[in-house]
Length: 231
Image (cartoon, rainbow, N blue to C red; front, side):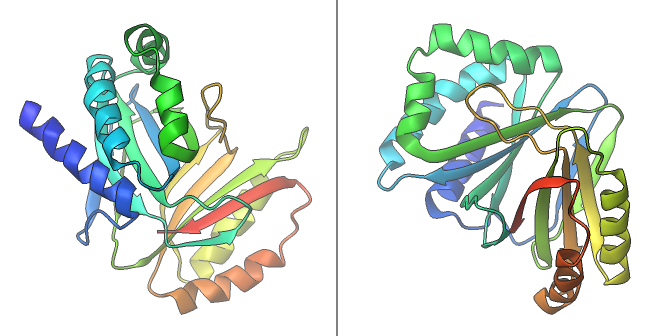
């Protein structure tokens, strides 16, 4: 286990420092009911490698003790919609919601400079998590044109019809749904909690562009904000 943790530490350090994709092979994810899935969007400040290594060496054992498991991540290639431009997307999961929420309290006691270190290392740190209501599996193929799209709804509105039309148009244009999440949660200070997040896979950028043009024509009256990134 210690060797695996160190291997992940080296992988994630390189990923966050360079913003490059972690691997070129297909990556499969298996989540069980009751586990909590994290997505973190990051942009690191320049020349923070030493601080980053110190942060991981101190924070990871605390997170692991509360049930955290790192799953690597991907470099963000391009921003397509929205005003947020992260460089890296990182995945992870926790054994249960209790451990996920407990960590935010225990880490402040055992690592008092935890949040300050994050501010020193990352210019942006956006975190969303979802408790699994059932078993979930999905796969990411980095050789394809992959897109993650997040939507926030307007107060009192529903995105149900918008989501259905979005997925219908994407499928018609040749897009493949990788995974969808709804009603994300963010801890205090790291707000990025979209009402609807979907990852799609395309054979090429050209195939996505055909859908993208149709997507922009859709009725967005129930949408308050969007963030769309390629990875």
